[in-house]
Image 1 (cartoon, rainbow, N blue to C red):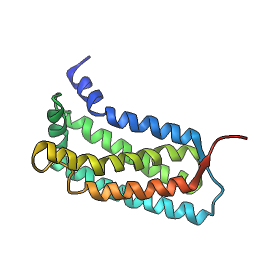
Image 2 (tube, rainbow, N blue to C red):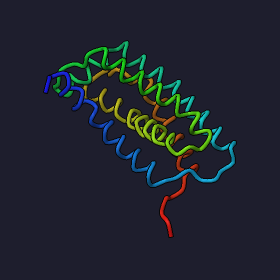
Image 3 (tube, helix red, strand yellow):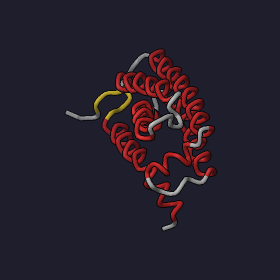
Length: 167
């Protein structure tokens, strides 16, 4: 295994855990029959969160998160192409899922759950990383905005779904 691949796998392992949880939520909770206006409000909140995530990504990129986070973990820095590509791919997936979420399509809930939880983690992790680094850590300024959006979206997604258990 190359050092770059090892660094990427270790550095994104927390997001992998979030992804597994999002998958379980998508399987265990199904879209409920709700008024389209509720789905529309949730989609709008998701879009606001995505705007915050774009700012957060810019904050991280300009302050070199792709270098500082791996260094804090003691692993090689991430190639810039990976960091930018990874973020842009997820932003595209999230944007595309908004339309599915508006229609109550089940597949769209996976990216939405993933975004909500990853945002909540960002809101907590960046201040902790700043304490560990004993100063500013890339993404700290925008992490509270993303974190709050994640918590609000989580609540809306929970309200739009119901347990998949059958009697």
